[in-house]
Length: 492
Image (cartoon, rainbow, N blue to C red; front, side, top):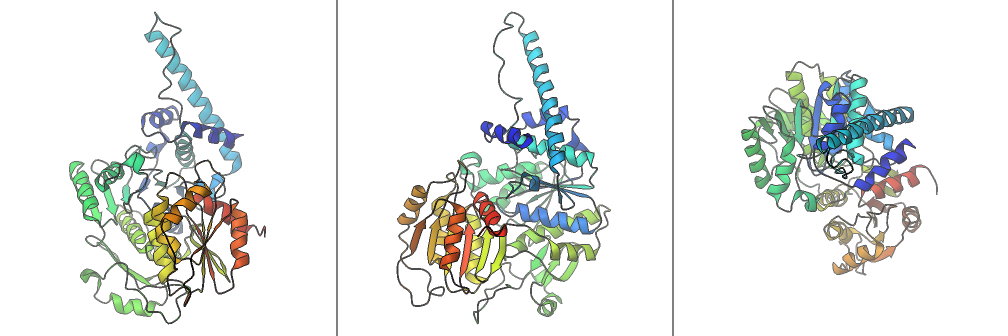
């Protein structure tokens, strides 16, 4: 019943603005002000960055709250403390308490409005601003839960944008912007400068910003906002550096590995690159203002994660400078053991079945890089379900040309694009030939299938594939969540 109440709030949709969340949090005693917050925004990678920071801090012995969205299978995944999901019992309790407080606030507001208009006591009360959205309510739940559990740190992932996102309250120790690409353009704007401005809204006066963004247009906005707010700005390849060799658990047989995604830095070269060669698979090096770590390993796939881990280590270095104890062993073990399901997650090896929540062109580009450079397989079966408000063509144009067969599907949500819409988009791309390295000597047209149910789509892909093939399920968090539930529960 508690969850149903929360999901019913989705009728209010996504509404930007901080007035409702601030009113709600004030009624709860402003729990966010009692927390040491690490606030993370970005188009992609903010979830895995949050998970890495939480993992290392937990290894260092701290009690760490982690708030992320959306969830894959269970609502409880959104709110965790030191790796443990919030319990059903606690959800019921918090929903009831916050509903009561919110109801009291609403009734008090109506009384005040009536007093202000004694000549018109029966006049309708404006609906704005009290009714919280689903995300505002769950954000309040997370802050209240973390405050009452007295966590040492609260790692908070932005929901959408930054400036007007419900998480943008309180005063974080550090703010992080992983990267900036075009997404949610209807709400954030279509220009890179506009999108960056929205995300830069998490920068606080006299605060600290860490970013792995490298695009000139975005950096100009971030630099301007930091100067305006007198915030310190630490940037990748200027204030901290990472070096990574290309690695993969399933390398292409005999194929020449691609160059490092992040070019070597002159400030990080001395004595580092030789150690990297000794480090074996997954080894990389980090150089910050004080730290120099060699032969680190990361339990997350994809070369793009080196941008994210660079932000993580720069953040941890700052925390250590503020007096927090973060030993090297915690750094190494936290990165080595971090888990972030549904993001380049391998759930089978014969055939390789990989799940990834790429839901915009930037995420699809990252996934494309992984599929082309980090795996060896004969045929690629692509299972795709995308939301209707996303750039379907941008996602399809990057991934469909890699495939032998594309199975279009639809997760069980009203936001999902119809099969007809997806089929129309993919046909307009006029894809006739998969990439030669994947299907050698095969020039036939791309095979396209339409299967509404995700479980049936996954089952069909499995039945059509051989042990040396690959199945990639992607396009949306909702698609991956349903597929993961089907695959890991052994329903087939």
